[in-house]
Length: 474
Ligand code: GLN
Image 1 (cartoon, helix red, strand yellow):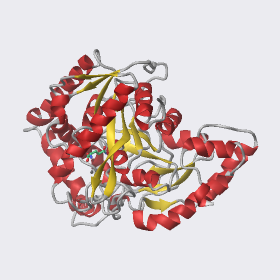
Image 2 (cartoon, protein in one colour):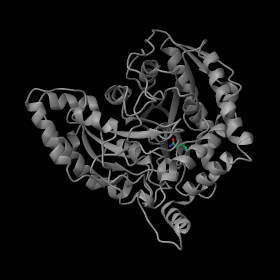
Image 3 (cartoon, protein in one colour):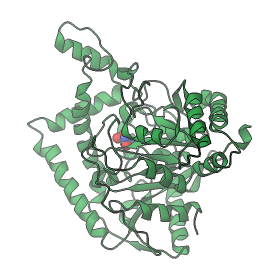
Image 4 (spheres, protein in one colour):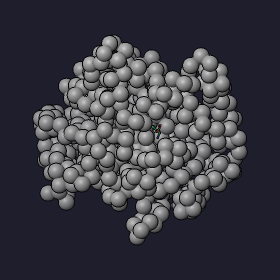
C-alpha cells in the first residue's frame, strides 16, 4: 500500500477524484509511514488523534460530489500555528501544555477546503533559529542525511515533506524559516508577499516580518496551497485587500543577479549550483543581467535589530500569568523572572535581551531608529531595481545543510545562514526557494536551494520561473 501512496497534492487529488483511493486510505497510509520513519527523523511533535475522523469527513464530502484542490489531502502544520483544541507549543517549554482555543485563519480556510491535518511539526523555539536545534523537545534530522540539520526554523515541516511523511506542510517565515529549510531538505518553499496570508492565529515573532507559507514537493503544489490560504482577513488588519491584483505573467522575464553580494562567505558548490540555475533560466529564453543593490548587504544587520526588537515586545505576553508555564517566586517580579527563566530557552532569552536593549531609551536612536532608516533605504533600492528586472536571484542559503551541533555554540555563524533570505522579509516581497543542483558532502548529494524574489504580489512570476528550474515547465 505505502509504495503506491501519492507524494504530491496533484497526484493525491487525482487518485481521490477518480475514487482509486479514499481519503481514509490516504491518511492511514501516511500515518503508517510516520510510525515507520518519524522515530528517526522526529519531524512531528505530535500526530493528531482525529486524523482518520477528519479523513472520513473528507470522504463524505467527496461522496457528495464535492471537489476542491485540497479536499482529502493530508498535510502537516508548524507548531506555532493554532489548531483549535490541539496543543500549540512553538517548541517551547513555556507553552508545552497550551491548547489553542481557536483556529488560525489559514487553518479555517484549509478546513473549509477539506484538508486533513496530520499533526504539528518541530521547529526552533518561537521560530528563532536556522537548524531546529533550539526546539525544547529535541532535534529533527535531515531526511537526505540524518547526521545533518533540516534547517530552520520550519525544519520539522521541511523534513516531513522531504521524508514523504506529509504531502505538504505549513511553515512560517520571518527571516527565511520556510525557504532555508526547504533548501536544506530539497523541497519547494514559498514566503508569500507580506499581508497576502493572514497572521491571525500565528504566534507572533516579528509582526512586521512574519508570514505563513507552504512547503511542498513541487512549485505547482506550492501554488495550490497558497491559493487556498491567501486573502484579506478582517482578523488581521495588515492583510492586503483582495481586489489588489497580482502581477500578471509574462513570456520572457529579466532576472537580476546582485553579483557583488554573492562573493563573501558563500560555499563554492552552492555558487556552482546557482550558476547552473541561471543557465537553465537562460536556456528557457529568459534574460539574466547583473544588478547592483548597494544596500542589500545591510539587510542582515538591519534584520537582527528590528526582529529582536519586535520579539521582545511580542514575547512580553508570556509572563507566567496569562499563558503557559508558571513558577512561583518571592514576589510578583520574581514570578516573572522564574517563569520566563524556566520557560524560555537560551536563544529566545538572548533575543529578548537584545531587543530590549535596542529599544531602551538611551540606545533607541542609535539602533532601532537607525535600523528603521536602513529598512527604508533597502526598500527604496529594491523598488528602483524592480524597474529594470522582474526578479532578483540569489542562492537561498550560503551553505548546504550543516552537521548537527556544528553551529550551536556560535550564534553569529547561525545568523549568517540568513544572509540571503532576510531581505525579502525586510522589504515585504515574495520569495521562492526551489531545489536546483547538489553539493557533495561525505559521499552524499545534498540539495541546494535557488532563491527568486519578486516585487509585492509577484507570486505568479515566481511560480513561472520556479517551474522552469524544477523542470515542471520548459
Ligand atoms: N533564521 C532566522 C532567525 O533565526 C529566521 C527565523 C524565521 O524566519 N522565523 O531569525
